[in-house]
Amino acid sequence: MSCCIDGLYCAETVLSDVAELHDIHSPLIPRIATGLCSGMARSCGPCGALTGGILALNLILGRDDTSTSVERNYAAVQELMEQFRAEHGSIHCHELLECDLGTAAGQQKYNEQKLGQRCNRFSQNTVTMVEKILQYA
Image 1 (cartoon, rainbow, N blue to C red):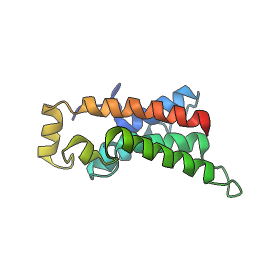
Image 2: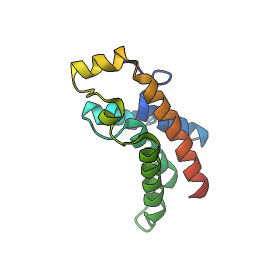
Image 3: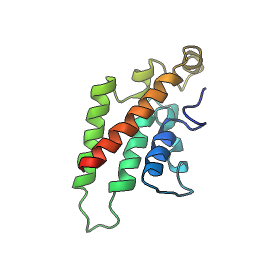
Image 4: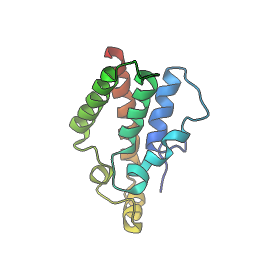
């Protein structure tokens, strides 16, 4: 399968790009996003760009202790999910790519039809969405 941007896959790309925009550096980035790529490790789950965006929102808006409310974070995550669905028609990897990356046939279709270009677009759009949401959060 092709990679997304600079060798990183969707969730890794989104998390890394948002972290970079906020001058956040950690050896855990992009590591903590890897299993979310390809629709949660090729399981037909949510799009990795979306889940990477959720991790990015958590990185900025997540709470540090139990005395902090989750409401601001939850509202931002819900907004991202709504925007992503409205923009792309689904939040699920297999629906967005019209193939199951957990199968050899799905991976072949992904490569032959250059569906990685869609993933790049989803990732870039998600970074933009996250940044806009953060402006108002």
